[in-house]
Each structure stands twice: as structure tokens, then as C-alpha cells.
Length: 525
Image (cartoon, rainbow, N blue to C red; front, side, top):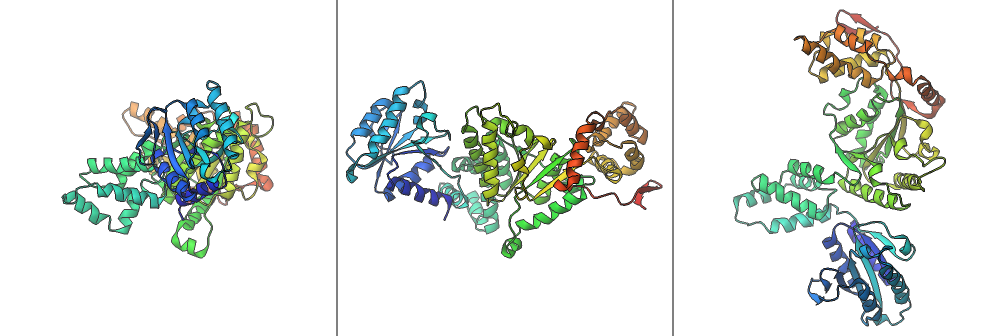
């Protein structure tokens, strides 16, 4: 049973249970109204639709009373109604505020009056259809919140079928497209590419692809359009590192962990009974590869990377942040397999531990994230990064909350050699052009980001003189750099003591041998 079918059953049950005021959150008004109509019918109600522009209309959009546009007069009309009906009020949340006290009070009184109706042929209920997930405080405990689900694959398939039915059947491009979609793999790619969008957004993507691709529906075009549409509401679509885990110098322990967990997403793993990975918490020194690991892991796993901005979904009202987060998570889950990145999460949750000065907003967000991570069954994988462990709430660090907790330290000598080489390759340079060992030995206590930054800095100096970079260019850049470890020595030491207490696994392996230089090559000895 799909989530949409479950929603229909739940809504029907709520109506049969005499819940007289329901608040349904959705951006898919048309699809939601179709499901509400079916659910109302299941419960023995006739749906009636109202909005301030068109007045009253039936389920087919036929006007019932085009003059009934006054939101206050509507309350009285519902109270006096002698039929068994569900009144679906579009955007009525706009009239529930301090600016419209009569509408707010009227709605509360109406809900109470409808509960007292005993004649089964005159039962009435009100559904507020809103894009806002936040129920105003005056209706808290009166209105029942229900979230309309994002479309699943079955919903997208139905929408795609409707789109294809509108195409001219005799057109060569139509015949070619229909033949292509007979292949199940091709059909899956077309559907997967629009998951996480509304049905209307998906239909627009298919239309744009057909217009720009000569009648074809190209998954690459769909994904590009989805990236544009998904931006906002606290989510940013991040381009992963195309080189994958090979782009990271060192951090072999966590890289091996990532390669192993990738197997959990295979069909064989599901048949074996392996659980889907939940998430990963990376704590460590700034600039040592925590965020980069997420970008590389997305490439290694072949999934999208979505960056969460909790600041964008926070509200000064307690409860509203959780509602916005719920919407954000629903969209991520609808996309399917993806990595959800909470970067520097201790800053996002500032105030969730200790004394709060935000009225409980951070605690609101933390509570929702913890509940969701405990209960989630979707293939959304969470990567959370933090630089300051002291600012994370203790419940966030509890064993079992994440699959694993890794500590990312400053790179050791072997890793510094690997970082220099990997960065040179990134900029199209052969590592043998310079001596990575010399650079590595000169950058003790540098972070990975500080070492990587030496290469473009050296390239500017070399370009100015009309030549390619040398070891000396990199050394000059290193000499001009004051590493973070010098200015934050005490904080880094506390992080290391915390990791050494057994609270976290180390992302890097212990250096068991010192690298030796043999000519221009580096070998372990």
C-alpha cells in the first residue's frame, strides 16, 4: 500500500471518528483534493470546496455559489448546513491570525458546535488545505494536523501515463519514446529522476525534456531541472567530488567503512537481511576533510548529496521549526537514496543543550532530528559534521544514534604525502614534478585544507614567472602559512583527549612505518 493510499485510509478514519477540524499541509492542491474526495466518500461525506476567489464549488469544480466568498459568513453557513458534508477550505489559514479575530474565534466555536451534532445525516467537518505546516496557537489542540505525502513511484507512474496520453500517437517522436519506455530500466530511470518533486513539478520536467530533446524524456535533463527546483526550503543540491574516495589523501579507516557500507544498498544485501545504514557523525579538527568526505562518499555510492541549512527552516515560534523540518525531510525521503549533510551541526543546534535563549527553537529541531533518525526506514543516509564536541547535546552522541562516530585528526606524515599528491593531480600536475615528502615534512600540524591550499598558491607564483611549480614554491607557501593548530592548540588537544577516551573511532590508521624517499618516489620502509 502506498503512502497516498494510507493517507486516504487515515483521513477517512478521522472523519468517521467525528474529528470536525483537520489541517492538511500540502503544495499539491489538485492531487490532495482528489484524494480528499475519495476519503470523504469512503466516510459517507460529500465534499464541498471553498476559496476566496471562486466561492463554493463541487468536486468537479462546478460552481455552487460564486457569491459565497466572505470567510466570516462561511462559518455561519457551515453551522446551519443540513447536509452531511466535508468543507474543504483552500488557504483559510490566511484568515486565522490576530488581524482576523472573528474568523479565528468563529472557527474554534464552529469545531465545537459540529462535535455536538447528533443527527448522522447532518454531520459536517472542516478541512483547511494549507501550504503552511504550522497550526496557529489559537487552534492548537483543536485542529488535527495531517501531512499529505509526497508522491511515490506509483504516483509518478500514473502522472507519466497521463502525460503520455496527451501526445499525438502518430508522431515519430512519440512512437520512439513509447518504445523506449517499454524497457523497465529506462522507465525506472525516468521515474527515479523526478522523485522528490511534486507531480506538477515532475510533469513540467517531462514537458521541458520533450521540448528541448526533440520529444524524448532524458533523465539527465530531468535531474538538472530537479536540482534547480529542489533548492530552497533548507536544502541545497551539492555537486559531489567526481574523483570519489580516491580524492582523499589518507583517512583509510573511514574510506574502508564507506566502501563496505555501500554494499548495503544492493539487492543481495536486502535479501540477506542487512539493515540500511542510518548515518555517520564526523567530529574533528576544522579543515581536515569531514565535509570533503561527504562529497566523495556521494560519488562512491552514486547518490545525490543534499546540504541542509537549518537556519533557513528555523522560526522564532516553537513548533514551527519542527514543522518546516518535517517538510524538508519528507522531500529528501521522496528523492530516495541520497546523503543528507548537516555541516557543522553544533552551530545549527546552538541552544539545544544547556540554557537556551531562542525560546526552545533549537531543542525543537534537535528533538525532531533524533526521533526521525531513530524511526527512519528510508534510504536517506545522514552525514553530520562537528568541530566542537562540547557544544553537541549528550543525547546526540548516544551509541546507536549513528552507525558510527569517527574522529578526524590532523593528517600524519603519510597522509600529508598523499594529500600533496592528490591535490597536485587535482590541478593537473604530476606529483613527480615536486618532492611530496619534503612538503609533507615541512607541514607538520597543518590541516588537510591548509596543505591543499599550498598548491594553487604556488601555481600563482609560478605563473607570474612564466614557469611551472617547484618544490620551493610549495615550501614558500607553507612558510607564509600560520596553521590553525598553532592558534587553537588547546581546543585540538581536548578533541584528541575525547577521542582517546574511546568515544570515537579514528578516521585514519596509525602510522606504522615512516615513508622514505627513493629518488623521486615515495615508499614505506
